[in-house]
Image (tube, rainbow, N blue to C red; front, side, top):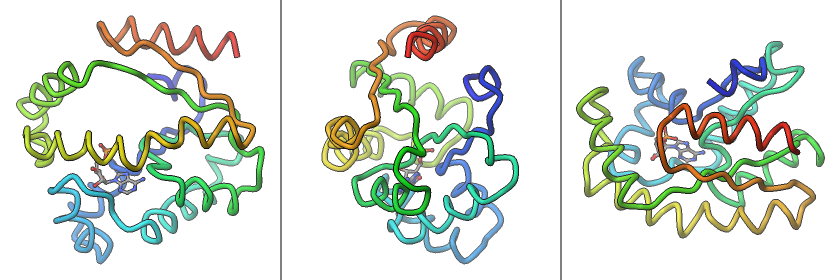
Length: 169
Ligand code: AMP
C-alpha cells in the first residue's frame, strides 16, 4: 500500500527469498531451513540479492525497502553500495509483541507461511531485539531520521499514520 502510494517499487527481502525457495534456486536452497527457523539468512547472500535488485531500472528513482537491513552489517553494506545519503527516512512501526504474535498466527491460517508458528515467531522477535533494533540508534547517528509510528489498530489506520508521518518529514 505504501509503495503504491509513493510510486516506488516495494522491495521485500523476505518475499524475494521466498520466491527463491519456491523456484528451488541455489540461494533458495541455502535459505530455506534458516527461514523456517526464523534466523537471519547470511548477510553476504542477502546483500548481493538486494544490490542486484537495486541496480534494476525501476529502482533508479526511489524504492521502499521492507525487511532490509536487518542488522548493522547489512546497513553498512547498503551505505557502501549506494553511498551515504541514499536513504531518506526509516520508518519504525511499533506494536505490542503479543499483538504481533496474534497477527502472525492469523496470517498462518490465511497464507500458510512456514515461519508463522509460535516458536518461530518468538525466535524472530528475539532476533529482532538482538540484531535489528540497534538500527534505531545506528540510523540517526548516520544522518537518517527514524520516524516512529504506532502500529496498533487496523491496517488502514496504521497506513494513514505512516502516510501522515512521511508527509511531515
Ligand atoms: P520477512 O518476510 O521480512 O518476515 O522475512 C522472512 C524471513 O526471511 C526472515 O525470518 C529471515 O529468515 C529471512 N530474511 C528476510 N529478510 C532478511 C534479511 N534482510 N537478512 C537476513 N534474513 C532475512
